[in-house]
Length: 331
View (cartoon, rainbow, N blue to C red):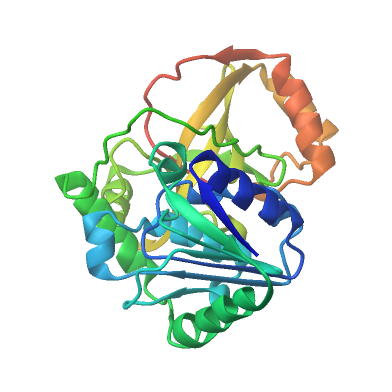
């Protein structure tokens, strides 16, 4: 059976099919935009299909022009295993395969394409589905390459973004509302910040990563935390650089991570602050005790009970709506 889809139906079909997919989720798109994963249902994180494959055009030129966002590539690699995400230079197809159906569409895997553009597609099943699946496997997947130089691709992207050479697409009137993902399946972390990060270290990290000047940095998180932290994770950052007075606890969104050799450690992440709470010192240490977090813990991944305990305590404290700019920090 063949079903014609357009605009809102495209998104609704992909969203529903990704809810139902249990065995297969194969996707190829030459273009890839930031937050493109939100075109799918968040169920693909909670219950990922057994066989996931993603093919994008991850070339230097595609990154430099802004057609492919390497941070989105990293998102798929971190959440679906890096071996399941590959690059192919010579294709221009947008194909979405779910268990026993396949969608061939004009829509690139870009959130705004599904929200704003007049895109169309056809949904296939039966023998036609088998033909699409065979094409994907034999012509795209088998000829695709693993992505080994993600840090280089991110640096190309950051340089191009600073120089204004990446694509800036004008948004048209929206015809589809993309459901935003929640933080239900995002890992949460706790880090103690005992000392300020030196200007020398900050400059070196920013120079080698080309992170935006607006990014805040936590340095020296250690190889274990670095290995398991993912883009989009949340972290509670306890600023203990001041030995007296109230303690700031930031809720931070992880934007990127990078290995840069410095005198202050080699493993770092960039973040943006979503909220800052001010706490009395005795209240802060009581919060750690109730959450079973040691007072000398410098970095740890929190379980559900710990997150609930900390969230409950912070909700009863004073929050700063607009955190004042401050020096970058070091764990």
